[in-house]
Length: 131
Image (cartoon, rainbow, N blue to C red; front, side, top):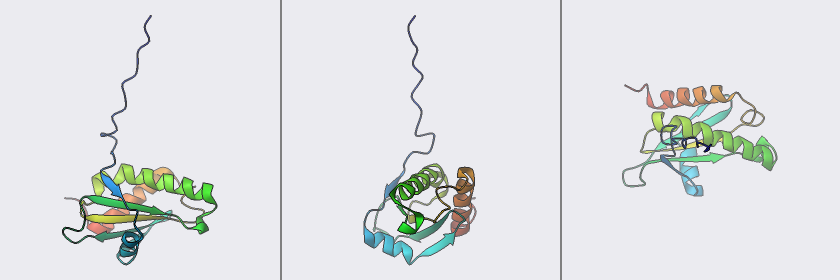
């Protein structure tokens, strides 16, 4: 009998990465001076870019040493990246920079579904409800 292969998962349907990742310190500093919405497991910073500054939605992730050792910080950032991948394509705006900041002892252990709901709520607070 021939083995059948399962079809490859459709990553586009699951909310593919439709955003660029922030890497320059200056971009993080500009976002730090913009609007912020605190959530139980993270802090969301968001800023609307000026026309011609960059294309598409951009996102950054950061966790200070207060979050824990390197293992804890990496775990927290992986969780932040995943909620951003799942939520931002539907609820983020293309002319914005977003920064998700991990919280000590919260980001790595908080309920994942609750984190997604918190990000949706934070984005709705920033941008207003979607029509």
